[in-house]
Amino acid sequence: MGGVDTAPEMERMTDMRVYADQAATTSLSKTALEAMLPWMTENFGNPSALYEEGRTARDAVETAREKIAHLLHAKAKEIYFTSGGTEADNLALLGTVRALRGRKGHFITTKVEHPAILETAAELERLGHSVTYIGVDEEGTVDVDALVDAVREDTALVSVMQVNNEVGAVMPIEEISRRVKEKNPRTLIHVDGVQGFMRVPMHMNRMGVDLYSLSGHKIHGPKGIGALAMSDRARPLCIAFGGGQENGLRSGTENVPGIAGLGQAVRAFARLDDPASDMMELKMLLRDGILQAVPDAKVNGPTGGAPHILNVTFPVKGEVLLHALEGAGILCSTGSACARHKKSASHVLTAMGVPDKEIDGALRFSLCPMNTPEEIDETVAQIRKSVEMLRAFKRR
Image (cartoon, rainbow, N blue to C red; front, side, top):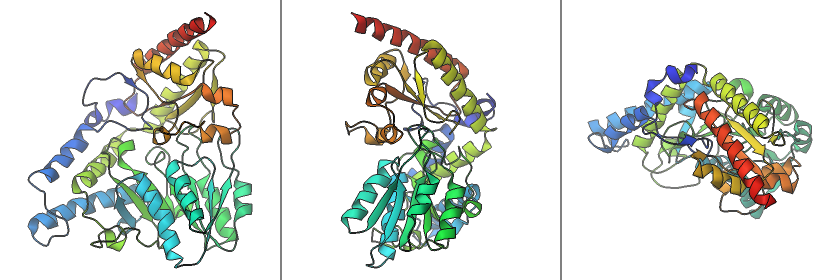
């Protein structure tokens, strides 16, 4: 795979089992760690300080800001650092509410969003705002006609994820933005790009995106760092008060080590030779191998979709299969790691119309550019063995 050979700086830090839960989190790359360490030790200055150590820290922050802006086709001044994707999502929605200055607004999102959006939307409703939740088709793609029909005179913001974190459906962001703004030019478009950033193209200006959330630990950067990019049209107000950092939008001393690590992770990922094609090749290898090994398995979501996420229903209980695979050295998940404490069925698969019995047997496999064909072969082999074992146990 081209991407693996061209980025030695993104080699695994340690030997590990087959890790196929990259959508939950990724390993920290060696060069991201190396970029972080100086800002924890000798160059530990506060970037708001006026002396040399502070100015040096500020330079590191601005360098990372410029890298992210370049990849999003945005301006450096439009990038605001946060503690991660969840805070960025909250800032986009709740900051837009604060900008309404007491007026009640209407918001639109989808039924398959990440909890960071759905829980925030529920809070908007508790605050007296109205929220419309749009359904999806059997592949997990939002109903654009229904979304546009829902736009009203008082619609303040539409929030749609770039890539669904459970099934890998890629949302038609550019079409949504164009059609929404034709109906109401004042409506803002927010995109949760946590699963899309650097894996699916994003051009904020051309695609008409006003606010875009991203997270570092999904692309081999550190946990605890993310960003909200926003165009001149978007003017959310801060939701946390303090020292007025990040141009007054996000108070708190900047996480310089995290920002430097994110900047290096972005640089390393950008140097890969067509990582999306490499991951898609692996994903199709995994998909075809599973369907051959377990003919009555069923893929949930689009045939293509995002290059790194594959959701499959097996003819055995998903959670039991997950633990069997874990014992065999294969790590995957039953859905979003951020909703793991909730015992209800997947809201994404439910919205897609997947029957409860099939939801119960669903597992998500998610990949990164460092996964290998050999790992895919091993994953398929262990799936075959584990499903056969569980079927035999069930018959007894």
